[in-house]
Each structure stands twice: as structure tokens, then as C-alpha cells.
Image (cartoon, rainbow over all chains, first blue to last red; front, side):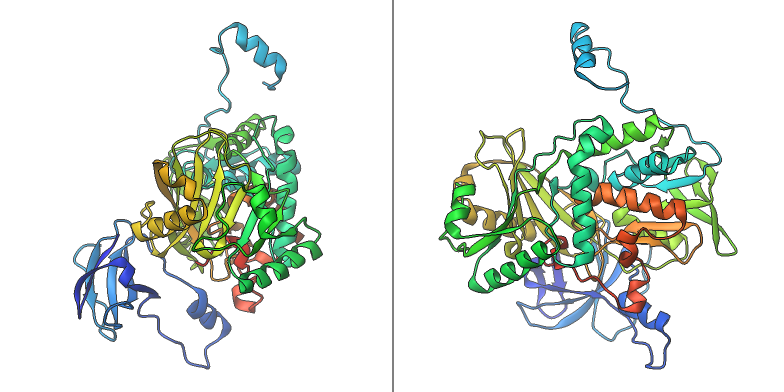
Length: 92
Length: 413
């Protein structure tokens, strides 16, 4: 069970949240070639380690936010608002 | 050594103490014709068919841990071919046909039990989808038949037809069933080893040697090894391994969990699947009730499942089988599954010459092991995709010809 610190409501249990996939995925311009679009639509970093991802507190305040979570340990490293730049991580 | 009733009797006289090792632990040489990365079912089957069907003799299987220690030893052992899309149907039915002959092929008892598989529908709407699905399966030439709730009760006596998850009907594939997964891994390892394949455990691939867009070897924890053809079969670690070769795959690694109860007397002689509540249920030969859950929603390499998914699965299973509520859960575990956007696997060539990929099996790669092995062996030996897997190449994400197979696991990802 993840215990997720919602930036608006505080620490809550995993079932209150919805996972929104990777964060900071930039949409390419419409003029981009097929390879760029393929990578944007389907390519995934899928790291074994720090993962930048989006979550929604669906059964709480309903707000979206970004989170850095370690996919090997499930440790939540950082929580920050949508639109903020990627935080710099001390270790990895 | 060929296993037979005579070897059984002979070893009975000496108290079963003198069986030779089933397969030979390989020592890593510096050069091979083909390197297979990943010693799970798909990797070992690919190595075996490369040796048997294509006459290659210089093959290594490199396994980071121990063979069958990943998803091949963590699945719920279900084999079936009730797929919707024609490309999937042809492939998975070929796989089931190979499973039907596998014990003889490998001279190893894989304990295939074609006990049938019932796919449940819990509402009129699900029943409509099931009818369409069942008809598509039949049109593809695979056995499938609709069942009424009463017919389901007849083949699944402990099921509760009128609980919170009422049974509106379902469909049955009689040729589906379960097959001992460790035996499949060891059967392929033994048969491949007998044909000269070097199976090297505790050997992690750390990098690729790629010259002018062509792969020529790997760097491993046991030193460098050269080969002109290399295939990756590493499931949940596919993104990581492919990145070492400069590739970015459309894969998300998630945790998929399963569990077994304490063993009880025979109560369920068929596999029951409820797709809408994420549950696969069967009874093993030892008597344990084996339950497969849906994948956790988020990226995970942790090989442990989340509690919310576990709870949801158990709640649903107890709703379907109230009599199981007194059973103790003995073990629960999870595998790292490699899920693609269209839930179909990725098999075939990559943009790097000589480097092949077999991944993206997500929650359902076990049933595909024999066909995955034969078709990938063909693809590697000839350099062209086998016709059965031509549609499953990495390139489909660029062309848009996706094979959107919700039936891959039958559960939402």
C-alpha cells in the first residue's frame, strides 16, 4: 500500500488516488516526423529507479500533482505541483 | 538420458538416488553464433528451437539470476487460445497445439491438463461482448462455446450464481487448461542443453557492442562475449536492456500478483476467469486454489504487489466462491510484467542489425512460450519475421497497425 502525501490534503492511502502515467512528456510540434510522434505517443522511459509521474487525488480533492517515486522500492522521493520543473534529486 | 518407464524402474531399485542432472550448467565461452539473453521460458524455447529446427550448435542462454526465476515461475500456469484478433488467434492457437505435444517433444512431463476454461460475464452487456468474442474465436477456427448460468453451475459446482457479482453467462474453451510452469522451463532447458546449448546462470548483460549499427557482442558480469545475433527475452527489464542498445521501447513495467491457498481436496476441475473483477481461479494438482490478480496501476520493478489490488481480487473471488472464505492464504507474490500500449507482444527485428527482441508479453506470456520459441528461432535463423509474428513487430507503433488485444489478459491494465 502506498501512502501518498497529497500536496493539498496531506498523507492519504493509495486507493484514494489515480495513477496518470509519466510526467513531463512534451508534445511535439505538428510538423514533427513519424519517428518523433511514435516516440511521443508510445515510447516510455520506464526506469528501474526514480520515476517522474502524475497522480490525481481522485477520491479526495480531485487535484492533479506530480510525484517522484522509486520504482524499485516504491519510496516517494518528492511531490510537487503540475507545471513545476523536474526537481533535482540528491542521489541517483 | 531419455526418460522412460525403464529408467524409472531402474532408479527405483537404487532408491531414486542416482538420477543424473537434468541439464548441464554451461561455462561461458568467448564467442557464439547466437546469444539469447534471458533464461525464462521464451529464451530457453528460442535456444532449443534454434538448435533443433535450424541446426545451430553454438548458442548461449545468459540468465542474470536462475532459469525460470522470473515470470516463467510466477504465473498461474494457464494456457488458452481464446483470442479476438485473427493475428493473435493464429499465433496463440499454434502455441496451444505445441503445448499439446510438448511432453513428447521434450521427453519431459509438463503435466498439461486441458480441463477447460470458463470466461464469466456478469451482466447482459458483458454477455453481449462475450457472444461477439466467442463467435470471433469460432470464426478463427478455435473451439469456443457459450454457456448459460445453469451450464456454468454444472461445470463449476462451487460458484455462486446470484451474489454481488451475478453470473449472466459465459463461454468455455475446452482445450484450455493449466500446465506445470517449472516443468516447461526445465523441459526446455534439458532439451536445449542436450543439443549443446550453454545455459549460463548468474550472468548479467551490462552492455552491447554495436559497430556501424550492427551488434557484435555483449559485455557481461562474466566478461565480454561475441555473437552476430542476439535476442532479448527479459520481460520486465526489457526497457532497461534495450536502452543499453540505444533503443526506447513502448513498454511499462508493472507488478502482477498471484497467490495460493492451503491445499484442499479436489473442488474445482476447471479454470474460471472473471475479467471484469480481475481474477483467475484454478486448483493445482497439489490442491491449492491458485488465484491470479490484475496488474497494479503504476510502474513497478519491486516484484511485490500492492495491498489494494490484492484485497479487491480476494473480495471478488470470495463473492464468486463463498466456500473459499475459510481457506488460509499460504503465499502471495508478484512478477514484473512488461505491458505494451496495445497489450500485444513485440517480437522480431529491431533497428540494430543482428539484435532481436521478444518482449511485451505483459500479463500473458506463459501460454505463448512454445510458439514464441519456434517463431523467434525462425526469425533469428533466417533474418526475416516468421509469418505468424509478422504483425507483432516493433514497427507497428510507427505504422499504426496495432493489434489491440484486450484478451491478452482479459483484464484492464
